[in-house]
Image (spheres, rainbow, N blue to C red):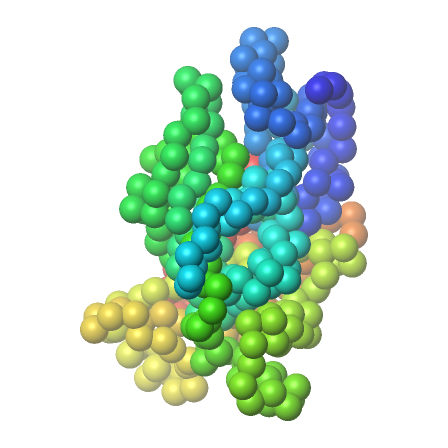
Amino acid sequence: MTIQHNVSLKPYNTFGIDVVAKHFVTISTLEDLKEVLTLKNYPNKLVLGGGSNLLLTKDVDALVILIRLKGISIISKTDNTVLVKANAGENWHDFVLWTLAHDFGGLENLSLIPGNVGTSPIQNIGAYGVELKDSFESCEALEIETNTITTFNKAACAFGYRNSIFKQHAKGQYIITSVTFKLSTKNHQLHTNYGAIISELDTMKITDPTIQEVSKAVIAIRESKLPNPKEIGNSGSFFKNPVVDKSVYLEVLNQFPNVPSYPVSETQVKIPAGWLIETAGFKGKRLGNYGVHEKQALVLVNYGGASGYEILRLSEIIQTTIKRIFNITIESEVNIL
């Protein structure tokens, strides 16, 4: 374990924002993680995973702890299900591909989501009608204050839409070190009715898809709509889809009859944030070396050399405009530092 100083974080965040960490250390074992948390010479610490859900707006005057805990293991197996444990530093998409190679079902719709396993419960990542909580069994997390491991089951995580206990009152108190998933081993339940999965499978001439083929369809859709962070800096979807009262939805519907919507309950409706942003005229808008992606209005992009503050300011302009036009508040998904 070697602590470095004045390290650029550009390679460690998918937005490609070039800010400097005053101190930096890569952690590959639980023992090193426990040790680094006890270092009194570095009172300010920031934990970094895959850097995919993060917008850095300034240099970091702290010890940045890069989590690289690796390892995937099968905990137990029955005729129909398997418990698989993945350590926090595993790349999320690589882990999904590992489950598919073993014919374990449940995560195929979450293919190609950027980031690492350890940060996936924090956000309760989701895509195409599936959320992480649907296959989540438990996670282990190191409590920073006591330097001890605590196990959280699904109920304890208090999962919500792109939300969990780790984004609420337990924020900053724990570092997730591993996540255990309950996956199917046969009779997989496919989720193909959300978004463009069915039409993509039709294009692939597949009528009775396997979980591997569903994954390939999801990957094809994401690659056609979302920019590769290795080519254009971005964090995927920047905003959450807002859930509004039915009265607000009806007001929007009256003005915009083509508004797409998804009922959440008898009194609430989800409206795609991407549609709101595109209708407000932001899709494809470019301001020098940053802007809104031309194919997906939910994605803010760094074409190269943009500052985090510039992208933050753009997000705030979008939020203000959406509120003015639709009387709807859209919230960011990403963590802003």
